[in-house]
Each structure stands twice: as C-alpha cells, then as structure tokens.
Length: 81
Image 1 (cartoon, rainbow, N blue to C red):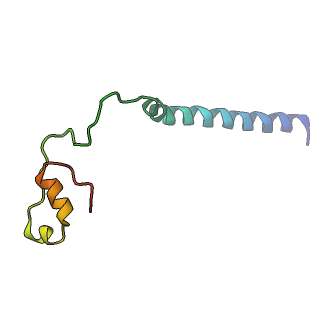
Image 2 (cartoon, helix red, strand yellow):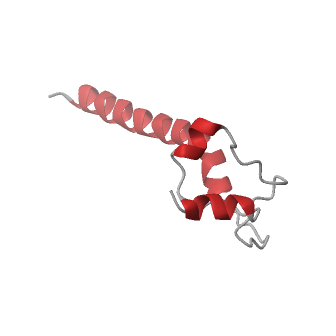
Image 3 (cartoon, helix red, strand yellow):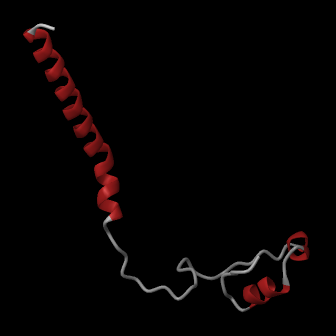
C-alpha cells in the first residue's frame, strides 16, 4: 500500500471516530446530565399526586385480595396484589 493511501485511510478512520464521538456526546449528553442529578425530597410511601382513588368497580372488587382492599380503604397505595 502506498503512503498516500495509508494517510488517506488513517485520516478517514480518525475522522469517522471523531465524528462518532461528537455525535454520541451530543445525543447522550442530556441523558448523562439528568442521570447525575439526585432528588432530595423525602418519600413516605404514598403518592405525591394527591389522594388515592381506588377502583370500586364490582368486577375489579371480585379479583382483589382482602389485604389490598384494606390498604385502599386506609388511603394507602396498595403494595399487595
């Protein structure tokens, strides 16, 4: 392989790697910055979106366990199936 061809091949590979790195950094940069942030709010096991609205449909109630129904009646987010 002659020298000009080697230089062209090496510069093409290096250019492709640099372009890929820049595109990857541009695409992944928002994800990386969001992943590094932490939340300092305390959670107590309940939802922060307001009150719990349980499904009181008769068909749903037949398939629900007593423990789940008790949690719903207490205003808790059900943690049992």
